[in-house]
Length: 76
Image 1 (cartoon, rainbow, N blue to C red):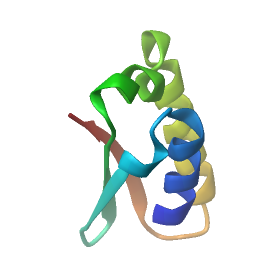
Image 2 (image 1 turned 45 degrees about the vertical axis):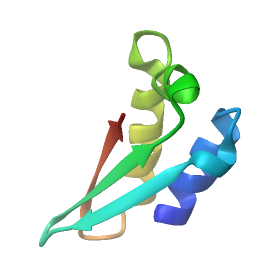
Image 3 (image 1 turned 45 degrees about the horizontal axis):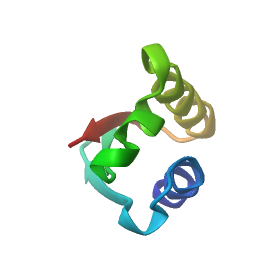
């Protein structure tokens, strides 16, 4: 799932080499923390958080057959 998220975020930003994703795994949930360059933060969040919401929707759809819940956090 981490590789899936990296490809999505790198396609959105101007500096794909600065994309970092930290995966924190719990018993039932996995938190994916996304760090990008400050200038790219708006591209990942989007107007009215629509881009971030779309990424979360893709994560939920991709994790449908797994028994874990994936949570996206965008970190500065």
